[in-house]
Image (cartoon, rainbow, N blue to C red; front, side, top):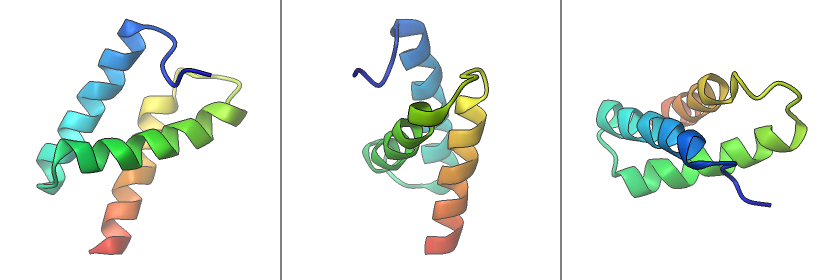
Length: 68
């Protein structure tokens, strides 16, 4: 199963990854790895996918907060 259903969704999540990278000062590849792991877990059980960017972003921010 592909993580992104289409280019529009991929671009939406790429923007979130970019923003998190800028906010945290960490490289996009590192944030992207964490983000896509969380997104994959959420997508497996999500019934409504409209909120996935918000929920994924929140989980990554929480992970970063706990690491530092």
